[in-house]
Image (cartoon, rainbow, N blue to C red; front, side, top):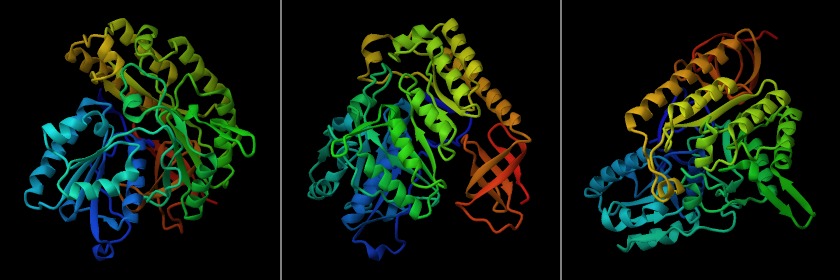
Length: 475
């Protein structure tokens, strides 16, 4: 699925191609250096932090300069064809670089690792090691194996939550926001999606380890955590010792109780699984953000059935209505696919109309591209011509742009409690932060004694389609 989006301010922002500085600037501290790039969803970026922790324990330090690295890793995404093409191009560049540095190892992590292991290792000979999402603990042994000239691979999937006891290294952190992985895998089997095949079945992490990680982050100065999972609303963990069942709503309460100054977000929800209890839990806690990412994918019931989304257009709309009733000021965003198999103009218009109904603040928008191995690839013909897909996608993008701008304009004159995350990208004289609704707000510093991680009341005075502009309210 080709992606287009209106803005990039959400928690699962696609920061493709970034490398990360690690935990020491002095390369002499470590016996070897590694460089890592992450592509795709927030879970991949979270996994890269786990990988960094594992490598750190083995004496590897991170570097921003891949030319200095003894080990180059790419954490990959398979959900869209373009992402795979980008990774292949990058691997080809690294393969050429290895000619000048023969001892350097190149490895692929994540979803592409599982799906394309044979091609990457044997046919195209682009990499030295291939490691699946559940096999990062085996990295040290695989590196040793690859150093002998053998091709090293481990893509086995686990039945358990694999990394609960690992404290992630917060790569490229702003010191304010952080991810916490709460579960892995997915049981939903949407027909267009490779995730169940590349990440396996759902398994939830020990609730106490999640709360402990949140507590540790707060004590280190972090003030905003995002609980991550392919479908967080399916979180389910049983504490046999205390005879307690922890649902996602209960987990939200536990993390929110760490401290009132710790903001709690989550991603991603499946519309069929987000419960009324979760909505009431959000409404009851000021520090659980009033923001829900609720992927719709299509506004057509017929297409939703082909996608195996297990809800109808009307059911989704009733869920949006329920959210608005229980959390009146809740921000809502979505994922939307244009041009799925057999999609007609009527189906497409249903998508446009459900966008109008839901009034999304932001959306991730794609046109469909067939992914090998998915149910859709096996069952349906990818029969919508690409020019039509692109035209429909552009109409979706244009509509989302209008909805986002209207949403922002409606906030002019309102005052929000904003968590400062750092300097504005455009000017060091301005702060940038986010509201509870996940909207970016930029406002002048005005020489006030504030810092990243502080909360401040900001009145919105103007906006762009992507950003709110404001001023600090006087005490």
